Length: 98
Picture 1 (cartoon, rainbow, N blue to C red):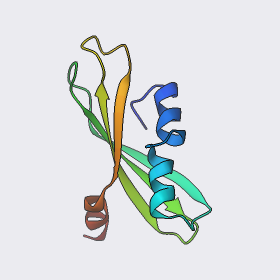
Picture 2: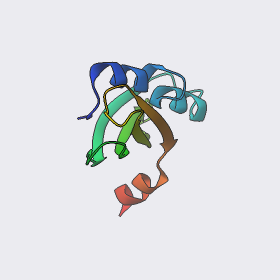
Picture 3: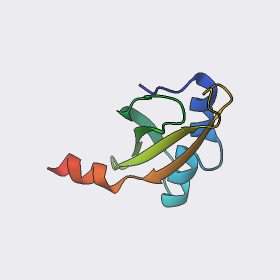
């Protein structure tokens, strides 16, 4: 379960730079993508502290790719918005095979 609100969750899925965008860049020939789970790695511990989540996308061939999502509040009050970054998380694949 993500710690994001509905608007940020939708942005993470649909906006350029989001999880689906990153997955389309890495897997342009995959036409079926399913968000299978989200792990909260670092819950919010105060203003301007980055949050981290790991999002897992499964493709039609059964291959799952993990993405590390970092969420950074834009303002000290934590109410004005959140900047996010998304990158492939190669450490998750190593953990799944151990």
